[in-house]
Image (cartoon, rainbow, N blue to C red; front, side, top):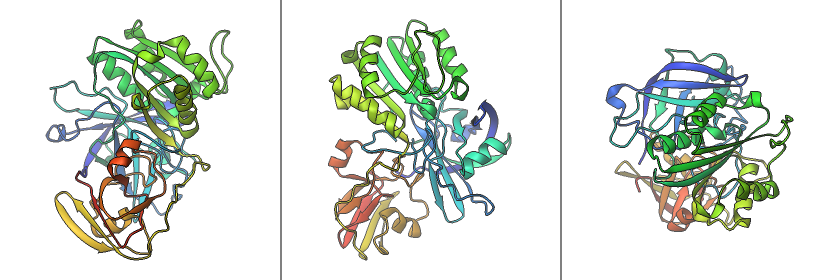
Length: 399
């Protein structure tokens, strides 16, 4: 089902590091139920494009910058991504507007409580990134931006158990919400957080994580790895690869007892982490991924050539329409030309906002950093990456 945009006032802009800020939006009481979210979800921010700004190329995920980062802010990722974990831009520029997706970093509302009065996200500045530069240099209290209601599947129910996360850069953003929510709402949880940053000065939400460690010293295990800064003797430094992680993780916690693993950040770190967990025998169903940065070397999957015509039928908010597909363009582009309310945010295959069920026909999905293998097997596609390979295609955004 498509999420709607609403104008929200900026209540606070807090400097986190030299190149990142935390932005807090005020949610009017009448909209609080609409903005209720689960820990790990993200929002999309929309603003008019500015003619004097760059094209935003390189503005991507929520990890270290990159077009189509994610989600996303979106859970699962069968490929790589490019973005800034915990605060880079996931770019999706349409005619006259800019959309960026950012993970919510504040704890989720407790079950039964009213929706949030505030939404807080982290924004890391990306070179050439139009919105991230604006947010870091110009955005101020009382500015108003269009914000989409929360979405994303980088989530788990808050239940007793042992949980763990490996994050890189701005990938801390959704995981900060997950850690705080689990520890605050479920007293029988433990969390092991392995975070990786270039330097201590570049680490987003350093104080917030330290505060959680102080509040839950017995239940939160924290390992902070710096890749470009020497540490005191005994503290880990240098790049985390699969070999190092496969050796490190069993020394920190009983790997086979972890109920859920969260991997978030640049593509390479997620791939190395997933490889380490495979070596350690972790069930893939217990691993949840969100890519913020897509590397150029991440392969694009091409199975069949797209058709050069045909039609696309889409069901959206209970209404169906059929329109011509132009030159094998992505399904989302066909729908957007006729339904401006079609859901999307990153247009890079990362955030998962444009997830739809393929009712009939066939498509070629170029990249997929948001859908889990079982979702693809069940018939779901990313409309922004799906090009028709049959004369007619029908998708359902409401399923």
